[in-house]
Length: 80
Image (cartoon, rainbow, N blue to C red; front, side):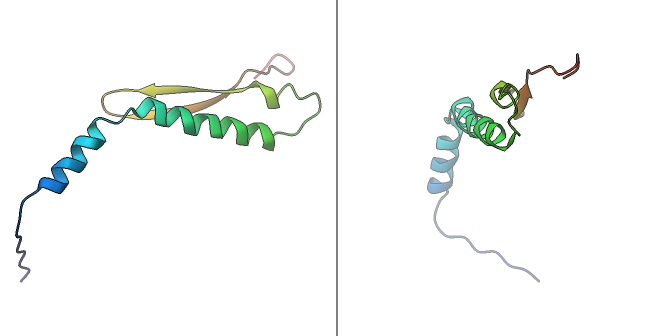
């Protein structure tokens, strides 16, 4: 048998959830998206430097989810 006992209130939990709810997710994702672009650019082999300098990102924030998609706009031989 498992027994749970609780004393006190949920003031700390509610305070935490309120702070999380007020976060600007897009700003946080932009920070990490920029770090990703820098990491990708530095890890890309450099012949002309065009591919390394063509990294970018797209951020998608919806009610239910958030995502970062890294992109590269350099076209080589007609394909990306």
